[in-house]
Length: 272
Image 1: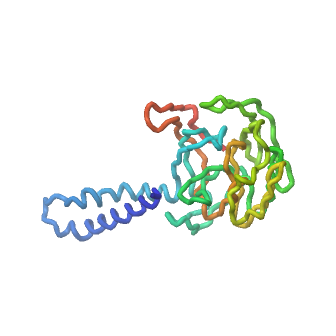
Image 2: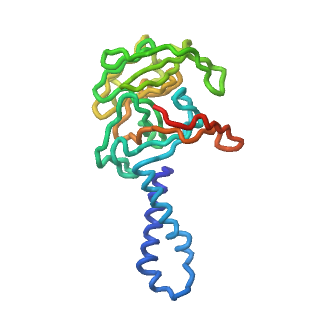
Image 3: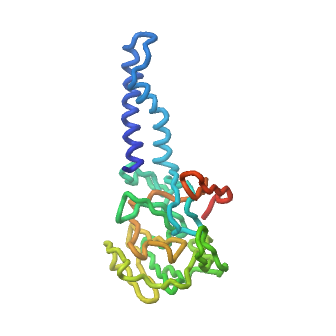
């Protein structure tokens, strides 16, 4: 079940019990009478649950990175914070934007609900904005016909594996970050791996790679681990209504949830 929905329901139920107890039930109890069980285990949770619900719904939400699609920027086991306020204030649970604050920018690392399964949260880097022409040809990125700056940065050993990929510095939207390429992986996207979507006609896949025109109200996203990422090249664009927020800070890292966990304090800090 959606954790946001659980918090919402708990906030409503505990809030009703708290208000009933404060404004009515408490006045009817005899002095010195202990609180009934429904107050102790219900209304008493409200002052705790409500701040958590408001904080998580409108400002910050924690996530754990489950896969390697954003290596080297984010590693499996990174615990990150997501700024939900950055892209507008949205109604909890419904995720409907009610107040415009800001919009995703090229180069942002964004958390969103996977368009083909809204129960899943994905994290990728924003590459194309509405109306952009995005091309990823022979493993080089072009936006609106302009090749994005890239510099070779040597080999990269993927943590926890024997895989060695090529690392490159890339710059999109004024943001510098690193990407990985596997020299043995093809540049094109096999048609059998493409998931049908509403704007499939906006993209063309060839032996060179992918060309897409981003439709209005949507975004083109890619993982930094370019040959190990299922992203807009495979399943399409991210609708604005699916956006959760902008990832901006690593606050903890543990390779495993259960002990013994490989804690890496060196991973704690900000990222782009």
